[in-house]
Image 1 (cartoon, rainbow, N blue to C red):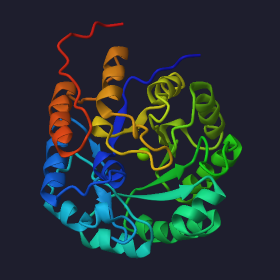
Image 2 (cartoon, rainbow, N blue to C red):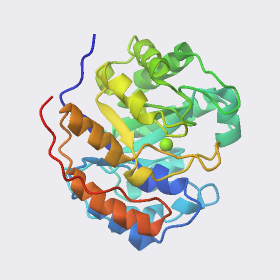
Image 3 (spheres, protein in one colour):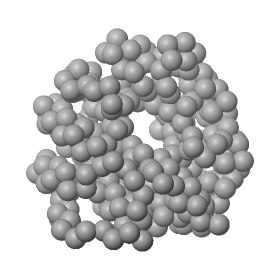
Image 4 (cartoon, helix red, strand yellow):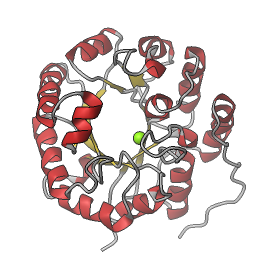
Length: 300
Ligand code: MG
């Protein structure tokens, strides 16, 4: 049975996930300008950066300066990624009120990308949660490779669901199921959601799709049919896919919003304000900006 949500919360990941996967390094002032502009569109969650070692991700080496430079608002959530307790402590010193952590659903991806096993990454997350929960800092858990891995291929939804359950029970407030390589298709995405909701309430699940094979919006639509109401996306589709050369990266926020507007699902975000920002992003990167939307949406 189709049960579209009335409202969707979009989590804008362009300044973090997008810039992290772009080859060029964007100047700090322009990152701050982008986030300040995004904050005026009605978006209520903007992932700002990562507090990681600059050696690992040089594109985000200025994370603390970016976080310090943006205009804060009580109405907008500005999470950052933290890889470990040291990252969390730096984030807390910077005044961060919400963080996100990463865990992979594939053992090979985990060891190649974070140099630890899944179990070791769960232990790191436990240490982060022990501090964050005491300070009532919400912690989002990303589960990468939720629909497939560049090394292992297909990943069983049961494996993903059991990891999602562990992260949720450990204290993660939200689990984002990430199709890191953009390999998923709509029925596969629905099977994943149907399996994970056996363990984690739907209202605590987010989806994170990539456009590698042009499937992101189709997958999002399929998950909306099941009632998913938190969607990750990136302004102008910022971010490539390191595992598929030349392929598109994160689904574009403008495209997701256009779909949601057409379905009559509320977000509180002004599409044309986003489109204007995509012109700014287009000048910073190679991404072609979207066109202004001049037609009105009818009620469906
Ligand atoms: Mg992504």
